[in-house]
Length: 156
Image (cartoon, rainbow, N blue to C red; front, side):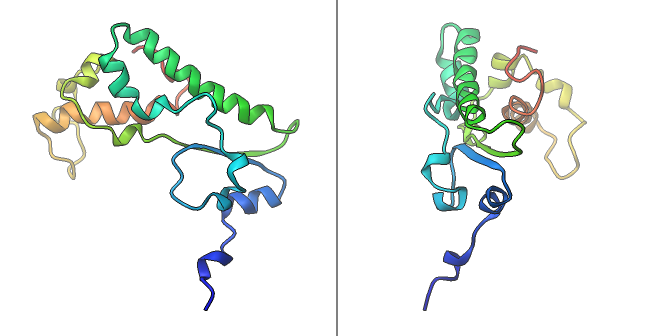
């Protein structure tokens, strides 16, 4: 009996069939064929973003290390854009594992100048409002924010 998963085309391939330029960087938990194959992976500038917090924490020059890693990210995305046809719609899946990093107490304050005390009493009711959670939450939020805001990668 054939594997029914083999019949799945996937959203990225559906978009490609409609004229979209598709690509991805970093982790991809499904088979590459669902993103049109290995040729649609953009990571030639490196994957240090997946160890962002660890690398910056260990660095003597944190600002320079942050900028070097974000330069890699921009280079991977620029490679993707360079293959896009003029005015072509696109789908790009950026899949950093940075939010899965090992948490280091105080890293949000040290890396991003985020004060965990300012979160006390402001977390949603389903998140424990304690010292550890208040210290961790800013760090995980900034891990995602770096890639979704116009000021991504800039100091706060």
